[in-house]
Image 1 (spheres, helix red, strand yellow):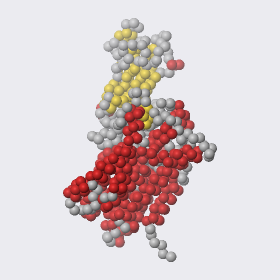
Image 2: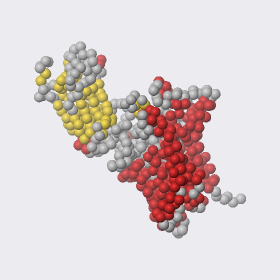
Image 3: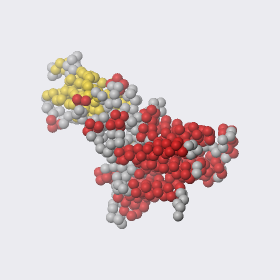
Image 4: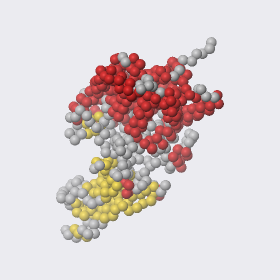
Amino acid sequence: MKYTYSHKHLILFLCLALVIFRFFIEPTRMLTWDVFGYYLYLPAHFIYSDLSLINQEWLMSLVDTYQPSSTLYQITKLESGNWVIKYTMGLSLLYAPFFFLAHLIAEPLGYPTDGFSLPYQYSITIGGLIFAMIGLIYFTKILLHFFDKYITGIVIIIIFFGTNYFHLTIYDGTLLSHNFLFTFYAILTHYTIKWYDTQKMKHAIIIGLSIGLITLIRPTEGICVFIPLLWYNKNESYFKNKILLLKNYFPHLLLVIFCAIIILIPQFLYWKNITGNYLFYSYTNAGEGLDFLSPHTFDFLFSFRKGWFVYTPIIILGFIGFYHLYKKNKPLFYTITTFIIIDIYISSSWTTWWYAGGSFSSRSLVPAYVLLAIPIGFLIKKIRLTSSSTKVIFSCFCLLLITLNLFQSWQFENNILSKERMTAAYYFAIFGKTKVNEEDKKLLLVDRTTETFDEFNNSEDYKGKLLYQNSFDELVDTALKNDGVFILGDEISFSPGIDIQYKDLTNCDHAWIKISAKIFIPNGYDEELPLLVASFQHKDQSYKYRTYEMKKESIAYSNWNTIEADYLTPYIRNDNDNLKVYLWHRGNKEVLLDDLIIHAYEPLN
């Protein structure tokens, strides 16, 4: 019996692949890091009745038991003393059915109903896979609108196996926002197509709800509004007919806006209750944020650290396909091109443009594959009309890039491709390797520990320079008859020090700062000890703020004590950001400071 290909068989196969690969490793660490913040709304409200996080005893207990991350960066303390969850609640809304199911079965199965035990981990992971499957179904519907089932199948295989969609959905990102955003981008695009074909009100409602939910998941994805706004299904008189269509169906436009706002209202109410404002920017760490005037677009696309074109090279097919899309469907070309340019610009404007360790390639662009798949399809449609040799070459090229993507996904998952420290030299040194030696590791970017204190222990790989030395020779302590000291007391709490911009400190990607000082502690001193302080400032706001204190048990009273510290410069937000180093005296009794010395060490290579 001859087999007849059906796209439904392919989707079924891919859905099975999602489940098999996802559960090849038990999902027992799924509610961690960013996902912990996305999910925290549910246990905080429905289990602990403490959405304002006032009673942190239960929260600290969960952190101690499940260790979701090295720090609780997912919540932010306000000046009022309230705590606010850093992320919006869109994903909690989608996790909710699976959370309630887990909460129902956890106790009968013998697990604690604390929101994080094994039934919750499994149930919510299954939920993430279900949404991924729904996304694949709607993705297929979109492609079938433009192409036959064969081109549709090829495009799906390219996106699924040839891009970072594979790694992000199956491994590190099943519960991250990008999996869910891919699904709702597919739903939004599908019903945008349907509305432009039929102008039915029910499609407008789904468009509005989708826009609201996408924005609630990730506010910067509010740019999804450009998809229905710019879409048009006819080639002739785009601007004239577009304006006429929106004018004729203006009530539908109002309905879209209304439905989107309805979805966003719970977030506005949460912010109002916790912060006192209906709108709140929760990224209060001065070291991260959106800098629209200084995007990292080139690095975002081409850097070996996490560049999109470097680690997902097959996506270049989409950009080649734009030419054929333009020839066949100019309105669609304008829509997709405008959206992709804006999406890349916003994604690359984030200061930590590599988006941490939990992403192979540029995870922020995975939802955009819904649209980029269309020009890929138009390219393949053109290739099908060429000679057999061209089709063979193109097929081999795609197969090669798919194989590379799967192999490098494996390398990434097994820490051969470093998750945050990649360089071009290291990339080529380990290309095709299944093991890494210590010599290779020396080619990586500096290891930035998540611990509170840095330790500079490979000075042979660096060259040092004196940044600051102050022996206070012009000052005299008449009481203790010490020439050249700086007196700290109740009127003077901060010593002289340095305030230097990063661009004047080094032109390397990092530098080590070594600080030392001598402090005289008098007899009978019983107040808080002085601290060495090192911090970077962005627009007068501090990030990577570190303090260093002498150990009380090692203090020599009525004598000079040496305090030393190592400080690794952070990922700077801007090379105009400035490093400050000084001594902070927290007591009222006088102490003396002498020989404040600060060195900078830059890498030799």
